[in-house]
Image 1 (cartoon, rainbow, N blue to C red):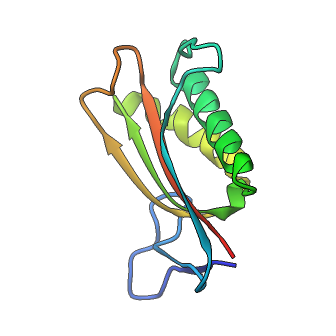
Image 2: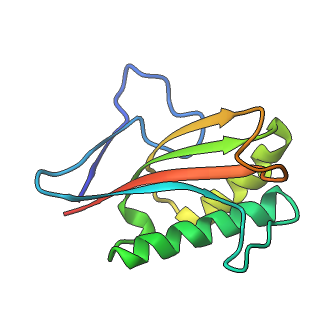
Length: 128
């Protein structure tokens, strides 16, 4: 099991995440490419909230294919195309992760791989 590190002497996290995660020796690693807000039929979500739902569904499916779960995520990087999407993306993430606190980086970017994409999230997972 991974160990969380949010030590005194560092400002508290600005959202629900840990400052550091220690992975035990011998753990299996899974690197999940950035997942975008597209459903299995190729339909892009209508807004940031729906795209975030699709993103987390895709991540869950990739993790499951490796015998892992959302609680095995140790690092995530979130890309959004505008600050106005942050509330919806955070709300979906907090509900889906249900208290699990991986390390996290959030970037607001000028664009993603295709027009219309508003959210992309990549994760690293580890399981002992």
